[in-house]
Image (cartoon, rainbow, N blue to C red; front, side):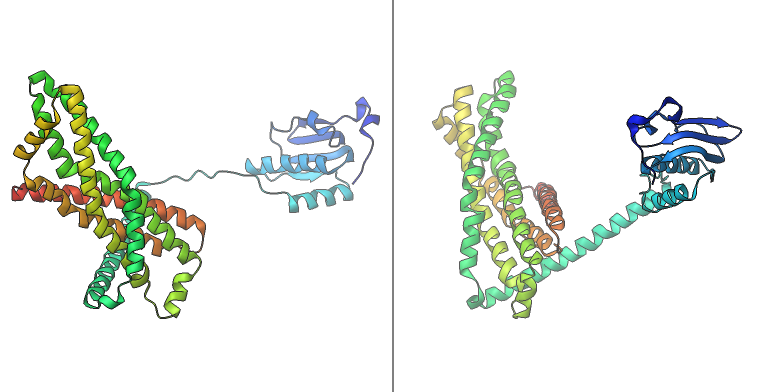
Length: 375
């Protein structure tokens, strides 16, 4: 590589580029301090002439290779002529080690490609659904075996998860239900006042909370709080190969890890639903008293006289099914975690989204069923 003091450069040695008869003619010194004066981004030619180049360093070689690649991208294979042996060696070395330009290939997606992608995603979703159904069968069979052999039940683990799933969730569930009751009373008052039917706000609050919103929103909160915790805990054990170690020791991960979590959730979600119902009714009663002047006594008497017990029973019937959905999805996604943290985060998010979706879908099916049965 040739070097020289840039401060000693004269005007005649400054680099120049010209395009003549399909030839790029480069003249002057191609050095790191001079190549910025060259405009090599316009025009095309078949030949690059370096016979008029004086001093030549790595920066100059980089500029020539960039020009060469630009012409190649335009469909031209340029020839470099007039270069000395040292210049040719420097250009060859730079071509070998210079990274390729980042280009974004524009790929046209046809209708058949889109149909293929849709088909692949549908097939993958069906395979996952079948795997989850099989996992559900294993869990139900394991729980049934534990009921027949109570001595194998891990009561300590169940009580621990009951505390994590139920007791620790009481504050957020109560606050959520209380605010939902307040919102229902406030919005219902604004509409019923127009017809002079303010007292019917009690029926609105009672039926909405006891039948639908109390248990549904509780299940959604539990899915986001406990379902994700199940996936993260089991997924972390899967990453550290603790589940493989359990199988090596002859322990069934379904019995040790999954069954206690699912049982705890089935036991505690109805309790959380009852707490949410009372909190929602309390919030609705307070707002009805403030906004409509419906006293707590009137609210209580109308609640008892006009609200059937089946409205309360419908909500409780849904609770174990919602709990089973949340527990199965959370534990299943945790068992699918691979050996990297990326899969743990992705499957934790999938667990929450899928649990909430399935809970809402199950609630819709229950609503249709009870409507057909006239309950």
